[in-house]
Length: 218
Image (tube, rainbow, N blue to C red; front, side, top):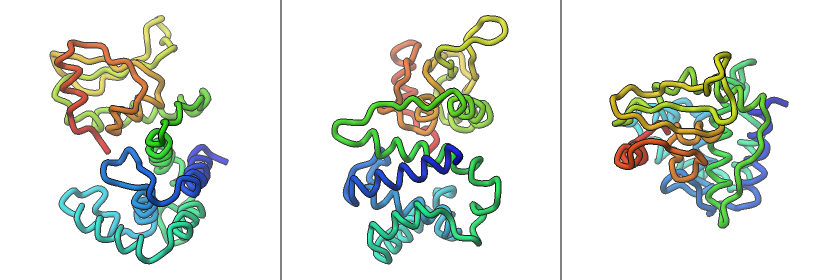
C-alpha cells in the first residue's frame, strides 16, 4: 500500500469517527464539506474546475451542497474510501501517488489538527518525509508565490554533502524568513495551514507576521 492509499484509508476512518459536523482547518468547512470536496475532485470534472479556478469557486460550493444532499454522510465517506471511479483520471495507474499523496496528507491533518484537543504530529518515516521534500523542491515557488517576503525552507535534522542544512529557496526577496521543520510540517505551511504547522520561523518579527498573513497555496 502506498502512502497515498494509506492516508485515504486513515482519513476515511477518521471521518467516520468524527461525524459530519466536525471542524476542519479548511475555513468554513465541516468534515462533511471536506468529504464532498474529495469526491468532487476525483469524480466530478465539471465541479472540480472550481478547485483550480477561483472564478468558479461559487459553482464548486453549489456542487458540494448537491453532493452532500445526494448521499448520506457515511455513504459519501465510503465513496472517498473506495477511491475514484474507473473513468476518472485519478484511476490511471501511477497517477494516484503523484496527485494524491500531498492532497490526502494535508486533508488528513486538516481533520486531525482541528479536533479538541488537536492530535499531535505523526512520525511518518524517512521515505515519506523524503518524498514530501522532493515535492516541495518542485512546487515551493508556486506555493509561496504570493508571499510578500522572501522564504527559505530548511529541512530539520539533515545536512547536504557540504555539511550545510538542506534548503529550498521558495520565494525571492530582500527580507527573508526561514521556515525550519520536517518536510511534512513545511508542506502544511506551504498549503496555508500556518496556525497548525509545527515549524520555527526565523526572521524579523514584521516579516514573519507578513508571511503568516499572506495567502499561501491551498
